[in-house]
Length: 382
Image (cartoon, rainbow, N blue to C red; front, side, top):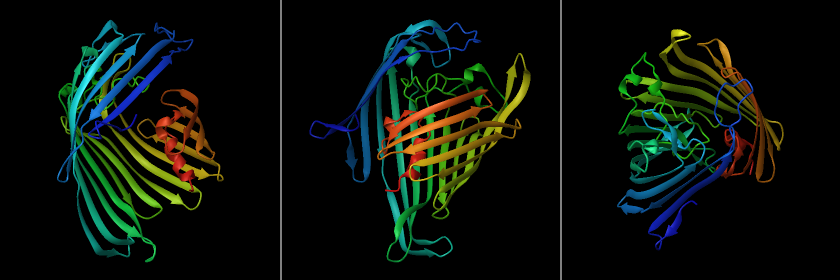
């Protein structure tokens, strides 16, 4: 439920509920003793907001409660990675927070550039802030209290004939700084270090009830994230994103690439992905440095008005090997899409076939693989 009004529209109510039956299937060669019977997983998160406006500043205090149930292993892992033989099947968590934002802008309608095809320029700045505090019924579902400071910027202009000018975002730059009450141990962020405590089981950016994604959500530390887009022309754009670890002072991840649309049927992407190296100490393999520098390429081709094909490839230069290859075929109906993906991941020695279906414009209702949902936009001509 998204944004239901309560108390004569003074309050807004959100609700997200999931009920599932799962079964973990192990291969015949697996030595794991994990159970393979069916189990139930369910959760419900309900939030009530109190939107307020102070001049041009929007402030939204909110309160939320979450209940979760899982009857196989229960919730058994704490923030520091410790586990117990059998966790609680039923847990709950309360959440209290506030969100605030405003918008500033300045416009110069006489600005022109023939080289970049720009007619006028509007600079929009949106600072925003969010704080969230958690209280759990059991320490296995503790969440880190978080503070987020962000600044979103848009440089907007117009293109087209004098009688048919259209607005567009020429540049976009979003920067967010996140601070957490309980970080991963500081040694884990120092260059050239590694250890089991690097793997955290609870990430405040991901609802703890999202079991389907992964048990391990990765490093959770004070960080700065940036996302940048530069639309060079109507057919070419530069995309980039970055993650910077504040506590260790190093760039953890950096991606940059270029996309180009070749009218009327082809879309191309070429980019590079960097993950900082770390020193790994594995008893069976010794001490070695492991990082990642990959090139990523993709091509999307509209076969006709109904079918679209996509091929993507990632090659890792640190290992000198192909990492992942994918081929996806999408079928468009009137307001419904179907996708069939064949993937080979050499890093995991895994081959897979994935099927997905989703309605146009409602990606939250997608069944199966979600990655292809964004590609359906280029298939929509109306």
